[in-house]
Length: 122
Image 1 (tube, one colour):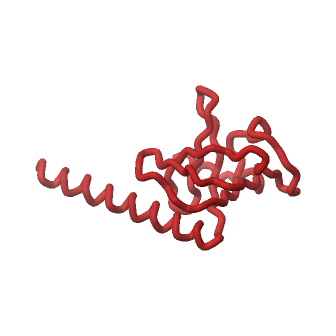
Image 2 (cartoon, one colour):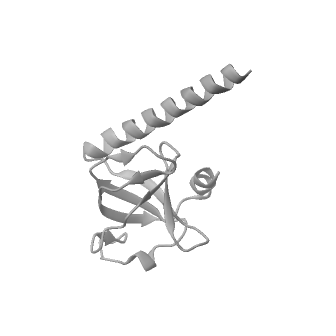
């Protein structure tokens, strides 16, 4: 029984690493990472990748955060549930939650529909 748990944990860790690596490769190729922004109770924010469905943290670059029309906004203008496109170097730290230190630009694209929002929060 213990051996099965260890194997299951190892397989889960490998799968998580693969998902993060695939997402990083897509971002490095110029594709934005689509995520939802969520504000935690302590006021800090966290993102959830809407494609691979994993949470990650990242520093929002000053002067590189834009709204739907392309206008510059601040982190205070982001609300829980906002969907964003995140651009950067694609390198995620292999931790939980993952850490994206190479964010270069974020574009808010709108609010999620009910299905997307529920999926991101579950």
